[in-house]
Amino acid sequence: MILQEVISFLEDFAPTHYAEDFDNVGLLVGDTNQKVNGILVSLDCLEATIDEAIQKKCNCVVAFHPIIFKGLKKITGKNYVERTLIKAIQNSIAIYAIHTALDNHYQGVNYQMGKQLGLQNMEILIPKQKSIKKLTTYVPKKHAQKVKEALFKAGAGNIGNYSNCSFTVEGNGTFLGSETSNPQYGEKGKLQIEAETQINITFDAHLTLQVISTLIKNHPYEEVAYEVETLENTNQQRGIGMSGYLKKPISEKDFIQLLKNTFGTPVIRHSDYLGKPIHKIAVLGGSGAFAISKAKAVQADAYVTADLKYHDFYQAENKILLADVGHYESEQYTKALLLALLQEKFTNFAIVLSEINTNPIQYS
Image (cartoon, rainbow, N blue to C red; front, side, top):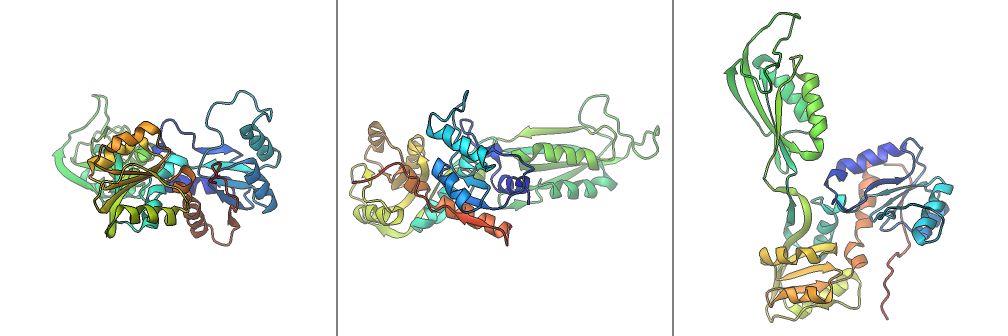
């Protein structure tokens, strides 16, 4: 198996198109054509992680966090990032980071947090904006089925739980595009205007090039007229954070204890108790202060995240219980998710879970 096969699978599940703009996801080190002997799955990729990969005979590390985040002008080994990269390159070990591409997947990081807490009826907290496109084109009636089937095969017509989302309108020689659109097919030089069918079909934004190339390949016209627009609809299958309900309401103190037990931490930083039961929960793995207002907007009783600063806790405003469980703690179940995905896809192949605790924060 070559590295590109692993990359293609990961990016099909969690397309890098949906990663946040500030992020650095995808293949960070390695050659897409190199043969993969084994994969080590880790939350972080540090020098110790590379040592572990060498020991376990894995020449590919699939990590959640990217080791390269800021720009590098030199690689001299002066810090932990550069030392990690040097060791990886010297030992021909590829590094792939998935980070916020997985954060924005319905069954990604935040789904795992909710699952560990036993949340039910989960929904994305902040659905991804401008991530749904619509294609409009006209096709001769007798070719419409072939074109639609090809588009469906390319991934169009499937958004969330809806499939084959297309409809048709019959017309007579109506075309989209410029006046130079050429509706001829069949014997070259013979212009044949026939009744057409209008096709409208929605698709995920990351499939744009794939859908357009499929349309052009399967359309009978030499010049294909089409229109692609970005819809304002929110995508309920892509976005960050998650909200859901505990099976039954519990007290605030019991909820804090539940967080300690679930995330394995002796300390939970939280805002003042409000003296009311906790039932609806919002979660967001990693640094989630930016979503406090959204957690309040969906009327969550508590918001579980990490990296809250002093003034962030003031935003509770006696309306919600804010709980900081720690960055590593909130994302720790991501490794098991990635391992399960890869093992299900690549059976009879060495895929192992990193045993190193990469949490830089200790409690005494």
